[in-house]
Image (tube, rainbow, N blue to C red; front, side, top):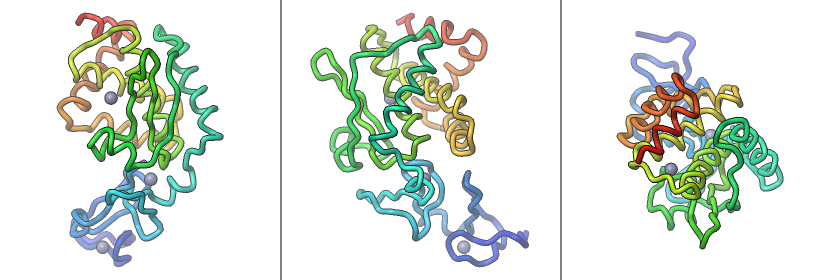
Amino acid sequence: MANKNLKCHVCHKQINGQYYYDWAGHSICASHIHSITKCASCGQFCDNHAKDIGLGMQICDHCQKYRIEYKDSDSIIQFVKNVFQNTPIGNITHWKLMMVDAETLYKKTKDKNTRGLAQAVGTEYTIFIYRELSRVAFAQVLAHEMLHVYQYTNHINPPKALCEGFCNLGSYVVLSSINNKEAKAAIDNLKKSEDPIYGYGFRLLLSVYEKDGWLGALKNIKEY
Ligand SMILES: [Zn+2]
Ligand SMILES: [Zn+2]
Ligand SMILES: [Zn+2]
């Protein structure tokens, strides 16, 4: 099947036959799928405008342009806080933010797919987040990590799939209130995730949330 108007993002030739596409509308020949790097922030296909951030990871030009800076982190923190404040979760306190580079976070997590981490320091928590993320990805990761802090500080300790699913539900609700193309793509990824913990746990809590809202989701994780 030839796709007359489709140019490949990698080899710039007209695409013939099977192809893959990303949320930003880039298509690539199927033959590139194993060699292409996906943006560590938003997941779109990287090209030669992408920036290396170490560990073989890259950030696309979209995310470089909309990169989170310390100066805009305050307004995004406030945005995420407001989303939770209007729910039974309320105010999440006892944490501070540290934006770190990919290698620093990797040293703590040993997992390249982890873009954030909430760590206890005494009775306070530090939320570590990649400093290379776009604002949308930052909001998504922050919402997730804030709900870890919420669970820790309220001594809620469900099985891992429910714990991570609940945090991803927070990301989902925050992304839903951003409502742009990048946020919609991130929601799609959450819903499609085949991860037995993050994906399964999220879909389970989403179905509870769609029926019974946050109170239903909270009841679900508090049963343990
Ligand atoms: Zn190609
Ligand atoms: Zn990106
Ligand atoms: Zn988590």
